[in-house]
Structure formats: structure tokens, C-alpha cells
Length: 153
Image (cartoon, rainbow, N blue to C red; front, side, top):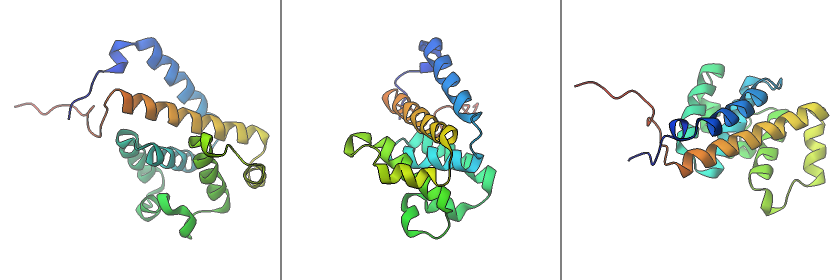
């Protein structure tokens, strides 16, 4: 496997713009575990191995719960997620696959049972941000471990 290009080096301003979006989303007040769940679910849907690898490791460090990590893709069939997490995961799927039906009013209302308006916008921004990172990583050919330092001979 070979990375197509190092987008950090090729266009630093684009990377800085993405980092600004990430910093905003990360400082929005969302619970860190929830933030990582959102990143993992969107990355699963988008097929971004690079981001999926990064964020499963991050969630493991934050929560230490490997079992939940294994079950994120089947959260509907798993008892290990709170109602607020379920609402956020469903919103993540709807926004990630927005052309499949948008965000139905009933979903909006379920999410709002757990999150106020400001938190709702924070959720959307978190979902938008990870979707942007996924598209950047996939388009430039990033893969798990591609940024790891190469071992010396």
C-alpha cells in the first residue's frame, strides 16, 4: 500500500482549515466518548480504514471498553449504548448518508430529547468534521499505519 500524497505537506492551508474545524468540534462540549463513537460510526459507513483505526484506538484509551467498540456497527442490537448515544449514532448515520432521506423530524425530536439546540449543532459539526476527514483520507490513499515512523534498518 502506498499513500497517494501527503496532504499535510502538499497543501498546509487546507490541513490547517480542517484542524480548525476539528478544534471547534472537539471543544464544543460533547462528551469525549460520544465524540469518538460518532467518529467511528461515520468512518465505518464511509469505509475509512485510516480514521477507523485512529478513533477505535482513541476510544479504547478514553473508555477502556473494547466490547462496545466491537459493537458500534450494530448499536441497534446491542444493550451497551445509552439512549443519548443511540440518538447520536442514528443522527450520525442520517447525516453521513444525508442523500438517503435527510434527517427526519422524528429523529430530530429523539435527538433533542437528550441534547439542547447548541448540543444538536455540536453533534452536526462533529459529524460533518469526521465525514470531511474521511473523504480527505480516502481520497489521498491514507491507510492504517501510513503515518507511523518507518523502522530503521
